Image (cartoon, rainbow, N blue to C red):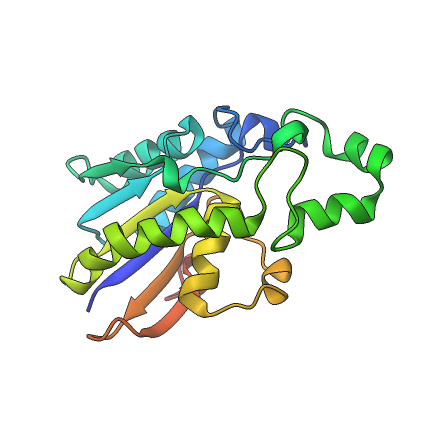
Length: 208
């Protein structure tokens, strides 16, 4: 039975500084490295055949730590910009609290959590969905159908877009979904690639 594991990268330097990151290529914070180590411990009992990640260093670094922690040093890795974080446009690099003071908390919440409202010169979650899901369907789903197990290490919004597709989450309900850094989510499929179970690994089999 094939399975899919998704992991949001560990905390980045700009996550720590409460800044909009988007496609800015920043690395992990020390805590982010620890989160990646913990993710590796949780993933080790669930071996995979291939891993996918974005072209941004915080996701690449997270996957590299996971590979060492699990011992999966020969795991094939495929990188694609299709899995990059959503582009936050003019907000990238700005402090979230300062942006909220300038534009209002309601407007910032709309930019961050809504499905189809994009920040100035940036991408909405809908835009992100429209590049992530076709890539998943064309490149990753065939691996699962062939019986291979897959790991995806990417970003909060690119993975939320994928969760919408996999779990049939509505545009309204996706606003309530938040994917924590460094916490793996496991999807188990039947032979027809229907989800049998979806769960976060810390809640499975007594792993803490």
